[in-house]
Length: 385
Image (cartoon, rainbow, N blue to C red; front, side, top):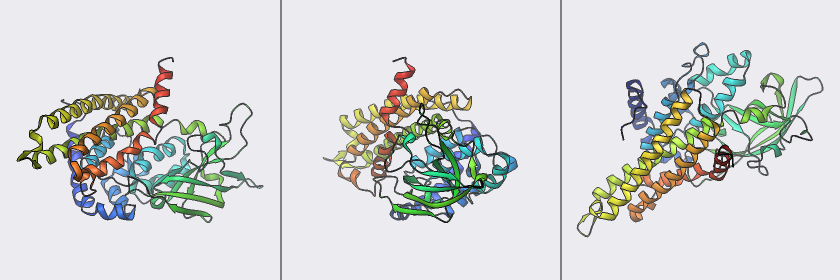
């Protein structure tokens, strides 16, 4: 179906990103997957393109407020090539908004210019071995020193995306005991340099997919964090954590749709070339019907995602609508990519074919950012159920 989401400016940007991927990413991507990380210099190159500074005000070296449509274009082009920019979306799409919203003027001057150039990237440390989605159960502590100048950070985190390639980590820690009537009270956010004494990397976790993006365990042993690096107000961290969830879930759902669309293109190319019983696989009715079903589902999901992007631009995207987009987009991606892999036969299971990478990479989209079950709970509540 015809899309009206993008202007010529977005399409020109698309060509820039497509060229960048073809030159700087695709030729090296297999090596990056084996290394379980992209090279750190990739973010410097992305900084040169100006895409590390989306939404950073111009006075701090960024592009200023910019439509999410540009990041949607990047998601579509990386999906089209079955690659990723490592933890780029975590740094710019998930963590940076916390700094833009909560940092004071001194902090913005100190952090934002180097983020805009790609000199520094960001990760966030929330999940702990025993907490999972229950952030109120966080045990990492940050105790204020007797003289009130710094916190002493101790604890451990797991499933931390991009930490190896990041210079700054937003750590969620408990600075006060929970209130009797509110377990969520007492959490704070603080920005910690990853080279700070006592900040240690643990195991590099081996994932099923997204293998070009590092995921690690972290530990903190008496890490000294100046009070000047507290983000927002002490003990109010939990309320901050939910503020960026609609955008995050929109991005996950939108990327799911882009991945499903890419899967259809990979399958089309394969079945038109592959010969079975003397004719192309594409000639069989089953192949046509399967791809027709996939196309219809993707178009429906695309319409939902595009509407969400427009609502995000106008500041009207709700948590429930973002949950609908994430739920439908990722579930459609799962069904469509599975069907497209099936059409590849045994070759679809081989990592040399991009459909296998899409299959593995997309599975986690129904888990991170809130599971499909959590999305259903949010939607049901919005329905008054």
